[in-house]
Image (cartoon, rainbow, N blue to C red; front, side):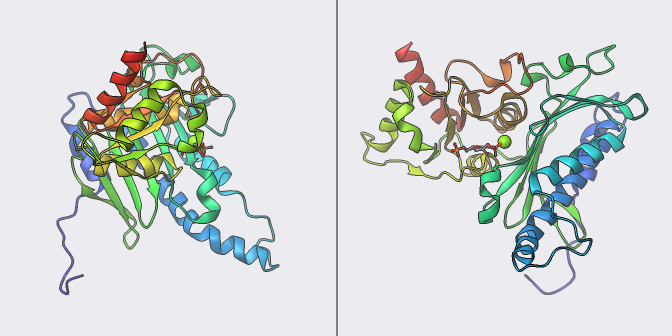
Length: 335
Ligand code: AHM
Ligand code: MG
């Protein structure tokens, strides 16, 4: 870092979203307030993700915490803070969380016009190893005249008003789209604000990295197997590199910045793959498309799917336009 006074030309998430919203003739500020609740949640989770290792170690050394109670598991903690802060914002009507079987319908006293679908802490198998994890979310507006029912969130991803994720890695990175491109922010822990560090993220048209759990190859369908062969044994002698973290947020984040393709396909064991449509597939598809990439099941655009259940799964291929088109070609040929 250079010596001298810090820059005062910073743009925070709140100020950036406010200026985007002001361009809407009928903006009420509700969405900005909703995003404030989400930001606070991400800061809280970020802090606790960093503390978790230490707290666990303290537990293992035989001491309990000051209150003498057991530490809550991080994913439960993250879910609780997300629900509490969204309810308190007064801007939500329906919440769908990966951690709750049933949608949460907000009581009349706190009810607003938005519905939020989220995975509070995705990639939880990575927590204990200190590998990147993240929060994924998508926001719908209630249908005209609706007070908030399940139907308000069983809508195609293309109807989302906002999609985003926060990745908890060496820093906390919030990547978000309100339908006008994709912007990335980094948490400045000193002032507790997300600062615009990656304005207008554009995914390269072609990448050199593929990101699949190839341990499942035995079960992959033919088009997927053939596609993977084609990038590992290419005619030009330049095979792709493999990167797979096993945290969707981290794998998608890298794909957005560097290009390439991320895939979690359906296979002979899981008819619809593993990832959840509402709060994994849709928000990530929305972000990738807003950044100039593509997101497909292999046969249809993910954002066009009309969900029938809150926790349904979806096969996913997303990333650089040319790479995803290659995958689509193999699916077309086998159809
Ligand atoms: P989770 O919601 O239980 O954490 O599972 C979702 C995660 C994604 O982040 C990731 O892309 C995928 O599961 C990895 O699955 P696998 O371990 O089968 O490769
Ligand atoms: Mg998940």
